[in-house]
Image 1 (cartoon, one colour):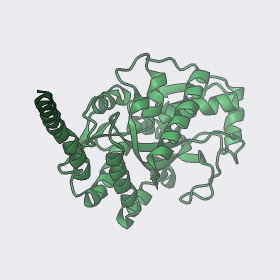
Image 2: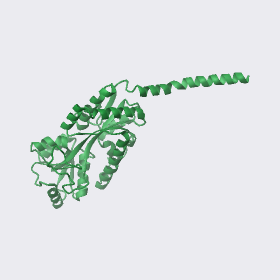
Image 3: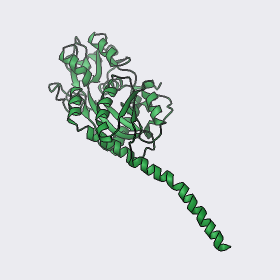
Image 4: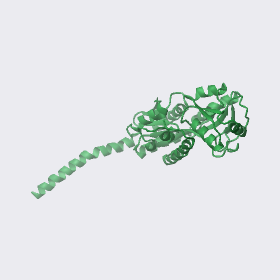
Length: 329
């Protein structure tokens, strides 16, 4: 009897082992075979904008490395939260990614409550960095940054600056500039870059911290003037324009970056494949040429480096938001 019981118990254990084995094997196969069907990339903002453009350029090149298409889908709304939430609650299998701007680092400070935790999104790749510049209306009286600061101090609350909206990089950079220079500037938020620039070149607003990509043609055409670049070093496209630090405002550095992230708990092996594909794509000569025309600098790096970068961005801009008294929506 004892032998029969042992035999029966062994049979049960063997059967259970057989039943439990396939899911683990399937999981391993799904990682090994990733990707075996198209990947969705959800962009936080409408088609045609900076994040959308960079995403389409990069994902088109990633396709060759991954062997599957990456379908770009725009899901705008709530400052990027609609898309972020959709990706956050997607299956962590690598087949749904988020394409975003710095909102994944700043929205936690700009909204009273979120239905997701942006800090748990899994870093995949920084797609690009685009330098920001201090752009002023064509007839603005100041020719240099220190002249602008002197004018602002002599006329507190009379200078205004445009942005693409509350909490955007242009808004926060303007707030940082005002804090560092001890000036009082009036923020004028717009719904996007185009209407803000239209009012700037029409002299309805005084200045704007804006991406070099959309500022350069206005600068070359004489429709607006660039007083400084918000980068550590001068920009090759406009070598005669000083940095803000050279102009006497150290610490006022800012760029607009675009990122790819995945849902929480996405397996590291899948993330590694996606990161590798993105890094390889950012070395492609055609991509580099298209980036150059947009004044974009390739990102790249490891998920660990990207995680550290986003944490530092969150810390930095969180402090700016607090110092400027920007209230969460």
